[in-house]
Amino acid sequence: MKNEISQVDTRLMAACLRHARRHRALTGTNPSVGTLLVQFSHGQAKIVGRGITAQGGRPHAERLALDRAGDAARGATAYVSLEPCAHHGATPPCAQALIDAGIARVVTAWTDPDSRVDGKGHAMLRDAGMDLSIGCRSVEASKDLAGYLNRKQKNRPQVILKLAVSSDGMLGAKGRETPITGSLARAYVHRMRAESDAIMVGRKTVEIDDPQLTCRLHGLEHRSPHRFVLDTGAMLNVDSKLAQSAHDVPVSLVTAQTKLPQKLQQAGIRHFASEAVNGRLALPELLEDMAAAGLSILMVEGGGAVARSFLEADLVDEIALFTGHVTVGGDGVVSPLSKNSVPERFRLERSLVLGDDTLDIFARV
Image (cartoon, rainbow, N blue to C red; front, side, top):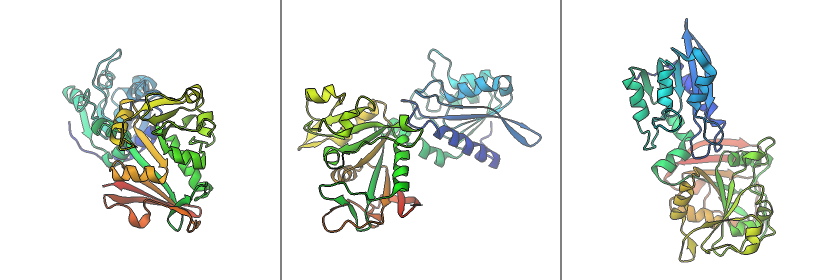
């Protein structure tokens, strides 16, 4: 029952993590977990079964991998990106399923913080005499699982603040939509949307830009996130693109009003009640309610006042800062931050060049 992790283990866990990313934001309240079952013979590794948490959250990855491997699972090594579950429901826990299938060794990346698991799955494997290694590629796994871990440990979603800033530090021109970045950067934003549970803007952004906030990458349109609009007084324009598409992709109005106007209800807009303090919606309590609704990854996309509010409340976990090559000029809306004014609690994690634009991703230290 050693906890040794080899270079082969790290390579196979990397493949396991890549597999898990395919269903990010598609697995309901469950995290997207990957599992690889591998047989080793004469120094060669052969994958005999693979699984990923199914869309909606069930079945779990381990169960799917075992079903696909069949008898070949006996004596195999299981690589699992998150600790196998230990709680009983209508089906046995995944840890027991691995034991019953005759798995010889289990390598995991992270311990599940869910109170029903939280080490109990690992304990079941140890008690069964299984060789167990924990923490393989844990740093990488923690980033992939950040939404789920945040929801379990901090009782709120992971918040990714996305900003597109011009070369002179502006979000756009006052009162009108102003393209800041090019097609490659916009495509990357759509990919971010596809990997998020929810996206949020303020009502003023809707008034000025009239955005759709959907994923429009070919083949990924079905992965558009749940759209939230911060609107204290419930005054969203029923003719906006968001309202007009609410029957196709969910739209929730976050408001301090007790109910929505009839015209918004008829458009399919959902009511997401929130408290207001000094005329502003209470963001910490709002995020708690979103976590309770099972939302793990929230992308905050606009506008400047909303971004500033999240930063001031220290509710941002990651900043995706796109810098365009265009210049807006003196009538611009000043961005709450730029590359040179990112708060010290964030560190630059990676940078990308997207045509004429750049993307800098900053993570909370």
